[in-house]
Amino acid sequence: MRTRAVFLILVILLTPIASASEVGFKQENALAEQGLNIQAGEVSPSGSTILLVGDDGYVHMISASAPGDRNQDQDIDSSRTARFNDVSWHPNGQTALIAGDRGAALRYSLSDNSIEAVNGAGITGSIELTATSWRAGGDLAYFGAKNGNIYSFNEGEGMLKLEDTKSSEITDISCHLEQNICLATSIDDGIAVIDRTREITWLDGTSSDTWVAVDCADATYIKCAAFASGRRHVSIVLDIQDASKSTTGQVMQLQEGSTDFIALSRGYDGTSLIHLAPMESVRYKLDIDEVFMHIESEPVTDFDPEVAGQRIAFMWEIGEDEGWMITNEGFIVEIYPTESRESLGIMETIVFAAVAVSVPGVIIGLIFMNSSYLQRKYRELRGFEKKE
Image 1: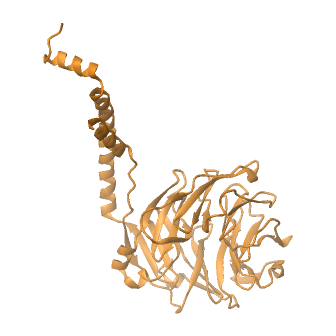
Image 2 (image 1 turned 180 degrees about the horizontal axis):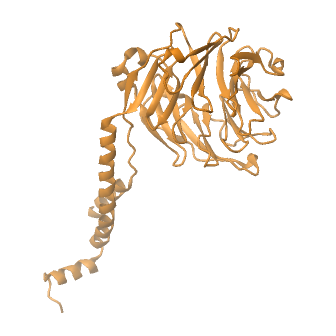
Image 3 (image 1 turned 90 degrees about the horizontal axis):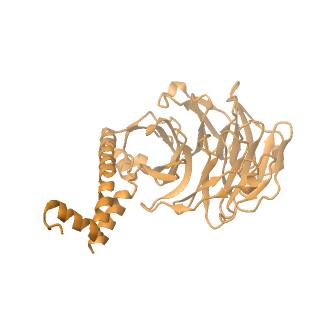
């Protein structure tokens, strides 16, 4: 019984400690438009602006460093009424692709704020386009559709439907930051890898989950991560030589809470910020394949019940837990680390130091308590028993 108790203490001491992030909130000036339903946004490659898209042909640009300053806004006329679902900047930062309903495959030009259909957009007909992303080289982009189609695009070839697509909605596309390999997630058909030659491979064992988002957030790792309904996530290790041989890790599940994954934004320092409905977020760290709480609904409700009743449309950071989020209705909220979080960091340091000191002692004690020889020698040294 004594041995079992010591063993349990050892297990507890060796268990990793994961703490919820503690952040504060500050209201910025909301976007002036009424009745917005922002769907997505992306930071420009220069880091200076945010391009937002949404319902009724909505395209709008705000400052990334001063998002509450309405004097820096640019309202962009798309001359369309379709809902826009996703946006992706070209790596050179001069243009951006927009994917939307009614076959909307569009290109925004920064030089004159114009929006026009891309070459070959007519191939999509009236199919709803749900996702878009440029690959690292900037020579090719992909569009995903609600009917499961995946299209490639460059100006010379226009849009081409890829072979080996399936039939369920493509929910997200993300490309590695340095390699010309991309991933696409779907509702029912699993996760697909798209190699340099535009060949599609569907990864084994992924079709049983409803995947809602994917991110290749850190260029230093040949790895990405996908997120599914049910608070599930999986890492994908890319095979650079033969993308069809890419593999998935074990599917993990976030046990705490009851909200669900719905979308993601790119976080600070190669992390991903996954949005949960109705108003929460978690941070995923690719290097350790772990999820940490970022924003919890209760503090947001205490801050502003109106914001808490909305949905996170997009988030961006300039430091860990330091940045902004914009809701679907155009409310902009600054996020910053609180003093209590900094104090928690000090306490964590103390706890880990204590663990580092105590674990070897526990191990030695466990060995001693189960060795009659060592106990007898100890008693002899202390004079409790006479030496023979």
